[in-house]
View 1 (cartoon, one colour):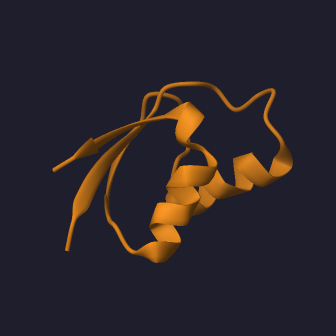
View 2 (view 1 turned 90 degrees about the horizontal axis):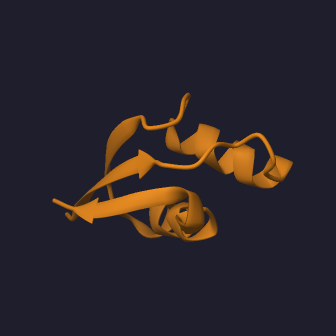
Length: 59
């Protein structure tokens, strides 16, 4: 299974409630936090929704 490292590089203050909820569901609590996730279709869709706020690196 593919793993990715996600880093939240932009703040959430002026984002829609749906985008904030997606970031919380991914596990982000603060800016510049890094999280490693296994990629499945659900996670890939969530990353795609907020990709403009994230830095995504394949592991």
